[in-house]
Amino acid sequence: MLEDTRYKVITADDAAALINNEDILGFSGFTPAGAAKEIPTAIARRANAEHEAGRDFKIGVVTGASTGDSLDGELARANAVLFRTPYQSDKSLRAAINKGETKFFDMHLSMLPQAARYGFLGKIKYAVVEAASVSEDGEIVLTTSVGASNTFCGVADHILIELNEAHPEELSGLHDIYEPLDPPHRKEIPVYKCSDRFGSPTLKVDPAKIVGIVKTNRPDEVGGFKETDAVTAQIGENVATFLADELKAGRIPEGFLPIQSGVGNIANAVLGALGANENIPPFEMYSEVIQDSVIGLMRSGDITFASATSLTVSPPYLKEVYEDLDFFKQRMVLRPQEISNHPEAVRRLGIISINTAIEVDIWGNVNSTHVMGNNLMNGIGGSGDFTRNAYISIFTCPSIAKGGAISTIVPMVAHLDHSEHSVQVIITEQGIADLRGKDPVQRAIEIVDNCVHPEYREQLHAYFANVKNGHTPQTLRTAFAMHEAFMEKKDMRGVDWSSKYSKD
Image: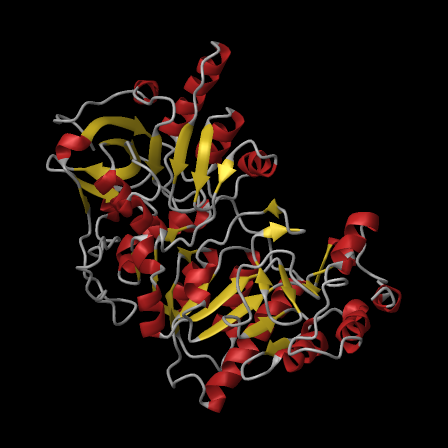
């Protein structure tokens, strides 16, 4: 894998010793797939030692998206994160962010690489990248994600490589590395169908920038997904029914269109339902992430090709992929996130986007990042990249949470990520709200009648029935009354709008 080499083989602690307080590092990883592990863990050890000695030690952490516990978790617990962008999902890091101990700024994932190149994030000193192999002339075969690794290696002063034997060198050919020119020289991105390849199978870097290689053998820290339950299964069925009806009505072209799906249990259920629906033909994906359900759908022929930036599958499914790489390399490609999420490609290919909301309001605005308006969950991720540019944009969520104490559909979202101008369809286990061509009042009726849980339906109808004026009959005095009720008594049910309106 790496015998006689021009590169210096070092330990993770040697690598960590190169890092200085307030350095900015760009780490590989898009989800835990392909994330650096040994070096960030060693940096966390160094941070603990520096803090014990009474010295400051924090670094700026830039990644493709979320990562694994060995990166975000270890650094957060060591109080070693000066700032973090563009997306995270680690509980330790989330706690530090919500306490105000770590600065975090949310970004659309397609925008992160160019922001790094433009210098908007500060000078990235080190790129830390996981690889399956590296050649003498600086050609790196990445592992299970691309993310923004290509950009980090391009802009960083130095490169540190984690050479991970858990991933076979035969991954060569899975990736398609392409970086657009920057304005004013940018040209069109030459992706005209999901399977187009127009870049390099390897990440090519200046060998002189590689200051050390750390050998490791650690699997991706991707956990399993929960079994589909009745609610997520029904959401999946509703999505499949809606799209099958759109196809039958001629509003989706014959042969179907590529699908983008978010990450998680609902996304797995949705993809499974699409594959099982006999009225939906085999389809392609142009998305961020390939996850568990995609592997089975490729085997059955229901998914014919998948383009993404990350192979985020649980260990049994990754084993299956690695044992039959020739089969899967013909049916999938991993690209930089700047390409997998690029608005130009999304609009050109006619992507149907399916993403998950934390809450939705009755006018069609979506909150996908914050709980009760102030506590960050994960971040916007790529949902905005796809939603704003999709052929059809769909958001899904269960109609209730916390055993019914929370309605995920409210008078006004407590934090807005996707406005009514971009959101076309809302789907819960209760039903489907098609918002296209409807004014605010029509949207509100559509959402409440079709998507709200029965326990909240009358309550939400009563909300806007009491307000007669304005294009969007909203009242600031009462818009967050359901949120306030939950904060006060841990239950959104039973809000008495009449008593609140009487104060006006």
